[in-house]
Amino acid sequence: MKNRLWKLTVCFFIGVAFFNVNLLKIQAISEAKNVHKRHKINTIAKSHKIEKSFIDFSVLPVVKGNVAQYLPTPYGNLGGLLLTDGTQIMFSTMFGEIVKSFIHPGQDVTIRGLKANAFPFMQAFELIDQRGEQIQEDSPDANFSPVPVTGPDLFVNGTIKQILYNLQGEAMGMILKDRTVVYIRSEDIKKLNFSLKPDQMIYVHGIGSINALGKALQARLIGKTEDTMVELSQFSVPPVGAPAGSPSYDYIPE
Figure 1: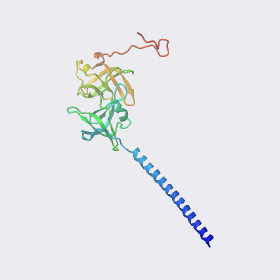
Figure 2: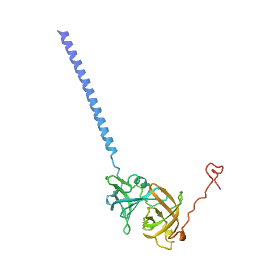
Figure 3: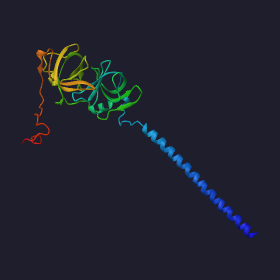
Figure 4: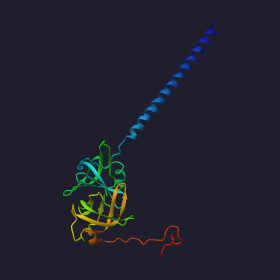
């Protein structure tokens, strides 16, 4: 009788131990699933997180419109947009690298920034596309230096569509009706014996670029006719060196 009772007791404890082991396994599997589920949710949430700028742009003026064209620089990068109502949107070329893959001509856009008083001009700090997605400027200098650029010597002529302005409210160039963008330094504009205005025919020589963003050049010669072109300030361009691979290519003159 005692042996039978002892055996029953041993079997009872073995059964309890087996039950506890299986219970712990079930809890571990359940916890692992929950951890994986939480990780997946966190990953999805993180991938859709929109990084906000330190600055609150919501207090800035808003301009809404449709993009008529890009405003490329003579370097071949993007420095602004032109809306169909004639509003000139400017931003840094660093921001332009993001803008050109976010906004395209023909699309509607909402822009927050600093708006000019007398001209249809805005320095953009935030762009919102037609889906409600937004990008924000983090390098606020929207100027670029009109220094010598490498590229073809372009010749263009056409009718002026619109005058372009810089952040100081000075004329800095023009857009022709064929969408070509011409840049002129403000000090060079003062040297002209005629005024730049819409619907005026213009002839321009200069160094610039032609790419998917459009055609843009820095004026070197300009005039109302090809025979009356005025030579503008020349930049100090380094002399052409020896061709790559030649014996003198690595020679540095003293």
